[in-house]
Image (cartoon, one colour):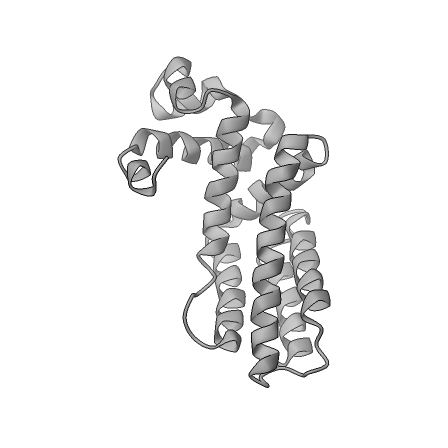
Length: 192
């Protein structure tokens, strides 16, 4: 669907938001299309008009979650400024949208048993890793971080660390655990 067409489909967005909230509240196993449709005030046939399969709905939820994380990535500024901005944005998301971390944890856990979801999560992982790798390479080229930093290795460390934070129980997870992990990464990289 063209980008502009999506804006013309508020019902679709409402269904994605309802599914997102359902996963955040009840987990992936608790996602029921009938409840999602009911939350929006439509019948299941209407939901299936927009999302022929449950997998299509889940794919849209992943896209929504990814867009929230992508909102933390600035397109302007030095690589160092963009990296700092990404970390600030992650902190903001953990504080303001804790459900995002619950949804991502649910999707990551489910992806170990679901080949289609695994492909989607792997694409997200690859995008995030390559974006961080480029930012780290740029910051190193700017001499803003040590030339000893390996962008490939450090991007893997950052992604693995933050994914681990998603999986923590909420009382010990974001935003506190995320903040601690980010502070250590910032110290390691010399971002502070």
